[in-house]
Image (tube, rainbow, N blue to C red; front, side, top):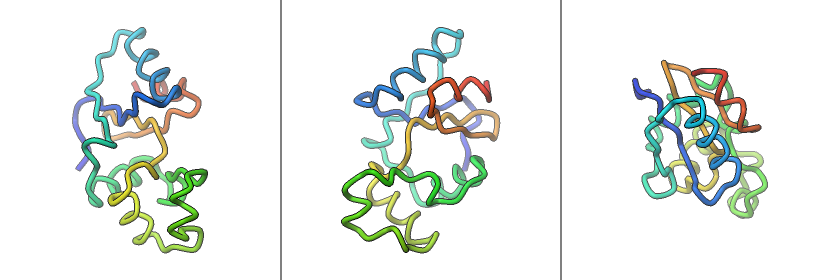
Length: 116
């Protein structure tokens, strides 16, 4: 289920995520911040976000993470990738802004401004 308010899936240790949050705040927005590593999304939430992004699960994964290779996800099915992201949220690309039934990955961070 997509949130109705503006929500940023955020990792405060990530410079891109911090930059996206600052851009939103500087533009006068106060998004709810979900530290998705501390409060991982469910598989259903990941599916909803994937659909809002209009991309595959593979496209919303951090393929540079060692865990991606360790788990052998390069040939995994869509369902396996979603399960992996639910079990290991570090695999989810960040930041992701959810707003008005839409979603965008903030890479570069300025992309978050496209849906506000």
